[in-house]
Length: 254
Image (cartoon, rainbow, N blue to C red):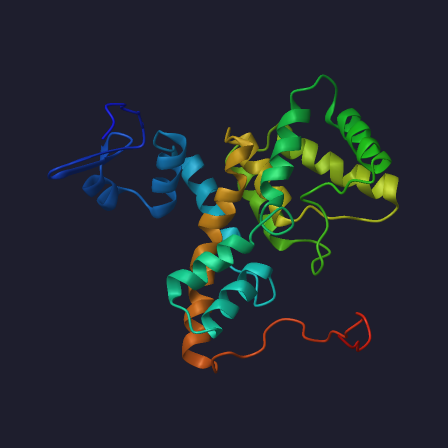
C-alpha cells in the first residue's frame, strides 16, 4: 500500500456523512433539483436562479431523439443480444463520439477559442468559416439531417436570453450560421449541439465538459430504450440498416 495521498475537491465521505462540494447530501436531496445538483458537482458552487433554469433546459434538451441515433441503436442492440441493462447503457454511451454527441465539445472548443479574439463576431465568423472552407473542414454544431430549424435551439436561446446568458459565444454562433449560409450558399442551422456549446460557454463551463453534458442528458433516454427493448421486442432482432451487399473477392479455392 502506498503512502502517496492525492486530493479531490468533489466529495467528502466518512462514517455518517456525505458532502458534495461541502454540502450535506441530505440537504441537497431536500433543497436542490437534479439539475441544480449537477451544476453544483460540475461547477463547484450552487447555481443562482438563472443558472438553475438554464442548466435544466440544457439537460432536458437532449434527453432523447428517437430510435435512430447511434447511441440508441447501440443500447438496443446490446440488450437484444441478451445483455443486462448496465451493459446496454454503457454500450450506448460508448457510441457517443465526435459525430454523435461529441459535437458539443468540439463546437464549444472552437467557440471559446475564437470568442476571445479581437474583432466583431461578424468579422470572426467570416474568417472562421473561410478557414474551415479552405481546409474542407465541417464546423461542428451546424446542420441537421432532419430539422431545417432545430426547435431545441430556438428554445435554448430563448431561455438564455431570458436569463441574461446571450453573450459573445451565442452571438458568435449565430454569426457563424449566417456566414455559413453566405459562403456555402445553403443554410446549415444551429443544431442542439451547437446551441448547447454556445450556452455552456456563455455560462463559463470548460469545453472539455461538452460530451459530459450530452451523456448526462441522454442516459435517461437510453435507459428507457433499453427497458422498452427488453420488454416489448424479441431478442436478437435486427436493428439499424441491414440493406448492404457484398463487394469483396469472388469465391476462391485454397
